[in-house]
Image (tube, rainbow, N blue to C red):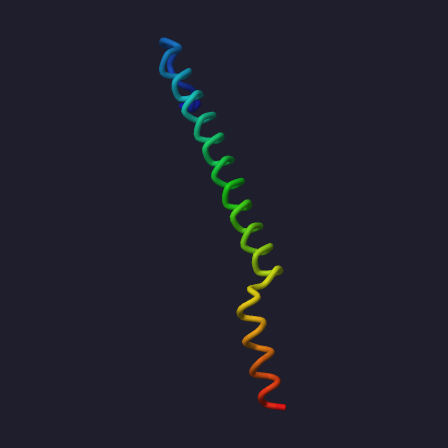
Length: 64
């Protein structure tokens, strides 16, 4: 056996190719969306929450 398929109609092969390519597009879109969400979370973390910063400063002033 050489692993090659028997010659037949091109329909199933074309359908498998389209499914494979479509799956690639879907995976790429999902990866890009995940990266976008991670980047947004990092930016929010860097900006910080003013309420949290004020409470930390208040506790620090009370200790001094």
